[in-house]
Length: 151
Image (tube, rainbow, N blue to C red; front, top):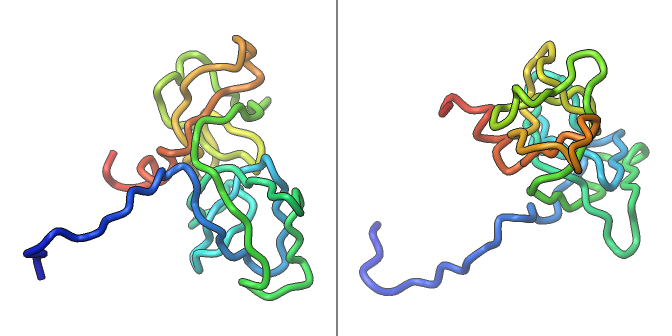
């Protein structure tokens, strides 16, 4: 039903994905890439079919390691931030200047590559940290879009 009166619609920055549940038997480390699995639970980003990169795991005042290895899915939560981050570059299929403005892919939870087996998007390459080609800057806000049929 369409609104016929003013309604509250709070603005959300979109930078943080609120605290989300971890999958069972996983560890997430602050500063690494996290993905959602088919159940919507957080797992370390990997070149694994079905994962969707959400962004970087954020530390909180208590934890920089989120260890749910002994827990069930949802027993522990972590917060993920979507933004541009400097990550590690693949030594096998490195991201280069030719990838600027293009989708780059997850090799593991800290590394991106120009190509990977399953092509799980990490985001869009926007440059290299201080010109250092071992540290590509990837905007993770576009990881979901890059993985969709929209582009």
